[in-house]
Image (tube, rainbow, N blue to C red; front, side, top):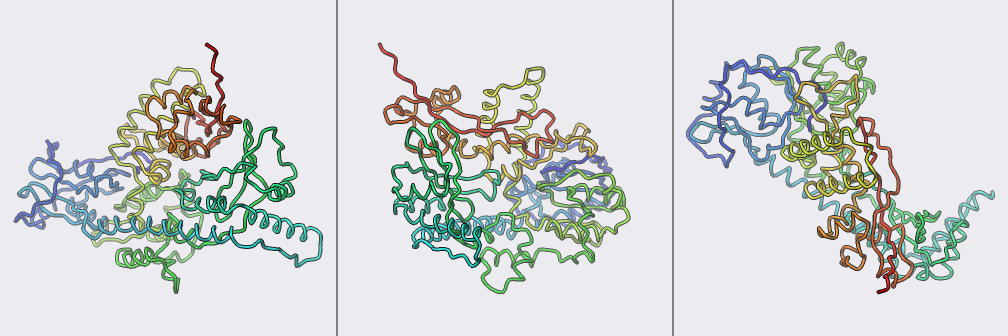
Length: 596
């Protein structure tokens, strides 16, 4: 995504005429035109560009002219780059782009188009890695399923205290009781709980998702001894007039339990299973920062996708020296774009880098920015490489190339440029329409959440929402740009909606299954439960906070939304007028039939 700092100049000193109709990219056609001959003609054309996060097709379009169009393949359609260069040969910049991105220039359209092809190796590896990752993730789910099943089916463990004092013995007694409780569950319930490991689980990606899917078990389904053990573990267990439900859910490698009483918030109980230990949570971590470095230090047991990654990175990563003296205060969590900009402003360096959304970056203070002036360029770049898994090199023409070592992963997390442009216009229009209005009602907040959340889920993967949209920064062409002295709420236009989508991910998945008539009724709070299909009910049931007491009432009940809480997100600090979108759950309300 684009990054937060002001637009500087973007001028072409070549005297190019404004581009006319630019031909659309197509499969390259081999023609007898030598690329080097064309490049020689570009040697004397000088360009000056200072842009952060500019889409590559837009950058190339600025250098196009009627007699020679510059285009990139579909694989680079959403590629963004950061470029800082002054009076630099266009040939040098184009060669740098190909080197940085692993592409190659070729001629097509009878020599009228210079085409940057993605490159077969880059294309196959990017697609391959994603397949390796998902396959490894699926295997991890299967492994976790087997581990949970084995843990739940083993005999209860009696824990013995190794220390002779009351507190230690009480701790051992509690663990013995918890182990006994899970051994008393029926085989059917154990199977349902173990199957949770095979459900769609993005807890490591979403972060704020919480407990995930839940297996609901009626109180009467538990044996008398199991219920007695629950009371021992939780003396304050609520005694409901109506039978309560118990929900089993995964938290990491353990199974937790909560009590669900109709009409009340669920209560998490002080009881959990033993750990179902697996190592897959490490090998399938989506971040995989420094994975190549870690892999070289492992002597055995390296997962296959890591082996492939290691082989490829050993060929493509530029080897950099680690900082001689690592100093956590040098960069201070600054955006990479801020550092690259300073290299140009303070040291007159020319820099080209690929540009991706960065997590947890902070505005750079003037004090930190000034401190970079006295630090050698290579020291700063080595620090960046060590902290953020980048690599860099300096070309013979003295242009610094800076590459994200995990481009193959981050390519799949970015939001397409066309979608972002369309959504920005829609959001700007909504902002204009809300100006002067009173504070949004809860109903309006819910409507916004459902509208944007459904749009995101229909067009983006959960990885794109969590990484490419949640952390996106928007560089405004109007001249405002990024200003570290003020809140950059305009720079994170979708952060609040993305956060709300992640918090309400499972509810929005249920909502997306409704037809248009059902959605209208649901928004109004009068969707009859009898109209839900089995597939819809499977998604709705785990989200219920309240439900009717019996089957007869359930048949006459409607489904509606309940705001559970308003979570203050760290991103709200970047939003000038936060809507405080809520976390939502569901409830059912009995609607008695009126007499004729």
